[in-house]
Amino acid sequence: HLQASGGGFVHAGGSLRLPCAASGGTFRYYNLGWFRQYPGKQRELVALISSRGVTTYYADSVKDRFPISRDNAKNTMYLQMNNLKPEDTADYYCAASSIYNGNIDSDYEYWGQGTEVTVSS
Image 1: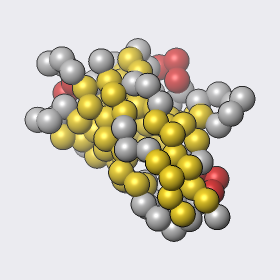
Image 2 (image 1 turned 45 degrees about the vertical axis):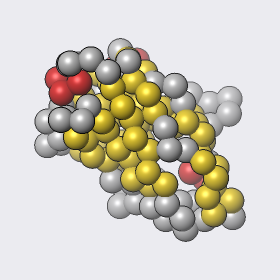
Image 3 (image 1 turned 120 degrees about the vertical axis):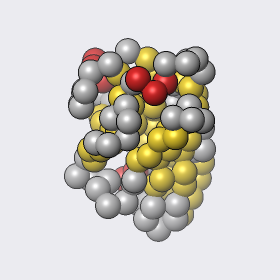
Image 4 (image 1 turned 90 degrees about the horizontal axis):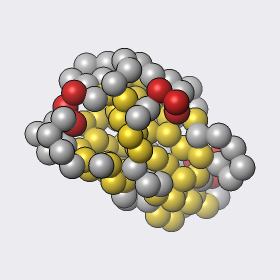
């Protein structure tokens, strides 16, 4: 079970931190990702992190702004969102995958509920 939180309203240039907390004892074995979804669009990968946190990947649109991290001892993953832009406004989802470097939503077996991020200009 995954639970994302931390969304909210922020002005352009501001920051938010999205935690994704997991229950169960197998969190550390899964690769994790953050996706976002615009209204009427398919979910798109924002960032992913490997099971031990060694490998990360970022979409070009968030590179150098949204570092992803995880704390396996706390069963929690984070997306630090810096220098937010209006085009970052979307619902954000965390997900877990047994596939290494899965970059599409069908690669992920477990999903948290979305958390809404709204960035005003």
